Image 1 (cartoon, rainbow, N blue to C red):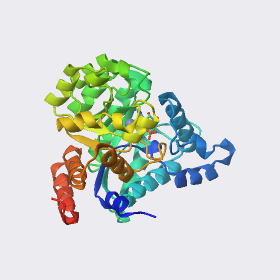
Image 2: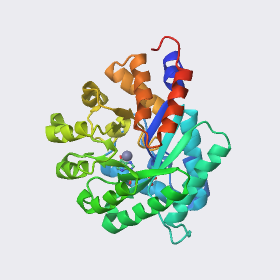
Image 3: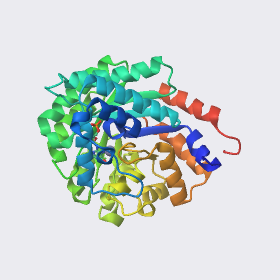
Length: 348
Ligand code: IMP
Ligand code: ZN
């Protein structure tokens, strides 16, 4: 049974800025997908990492491949996106930036354009059904696919930024950090920036990316995903930290994802502590709530328990996330009002 503490985190209005669509698919939705495609012989243990389990980062990326097999038609994408949005809303998320890598599939006729259109359709449908959440979309570049695909993805995002009534707001750079070189993607990322797309880049997710991080920080990005190995205590460097501080680039931090993916040894050693103590803007996020069997309320609760945050501090953390969203200032104002309206008594 839910106790009072759990209820506080669940009722806390939240902002989710780092959620990969196919990594966010819940057990329930996976079940529906499996029943649509029984011939694939996919079991639940292949699509999620349960409580207390950990995997190598490489094994985590295998999980995405399995989920991609289950999600390969417009119909699947519509269902998955719609379920994920409703689940975030049910968890108290008031503003969500979803990100996803457009895929094509010759067998099902899926094209990258249709892929993006379908995610947008799901967002619009949820809105018209009155689901209490503002959702925006970041088009993702999978770093593995190189220069040309990155440029093609940016052009697609550009097209939708202009035609989606403000729903497409930016670009995500993600994918297996041990594959590909960020340097090859610079022209595409620069183009995205020049045309007004915001940039959220996975940076220093593994220790070997110092040079790449330095290069990408010069863009500079608008937000950083993870940034696990940026700071000197874990082999990063003060000059990388200084660049982040100079440009005041917020970090999206995903505790369970990093612990289960073994890039961080345990919750108490998470780099949340380093950046929080600096007073730098950080936003708690889930990364892949389905794959890592978590949700945003749990992540806030874990951060609070691990680092001894008071309820006031937790409230502030969720409120300050509003400053880091990619939607325009008018949306920020509306969200700030929502936080004020729901602030519990006793929290300043
Ligand atoms: P999708 O883009 O909606 O298909 O979501 C799954 C994809 O997100 C994966 O194939 C990766 O490219 C990316 N992704 C999810 N989690 C991570 C992460 O922790 N690091 C880097 N990339 C990730
Ligand atoms: Zn991620």
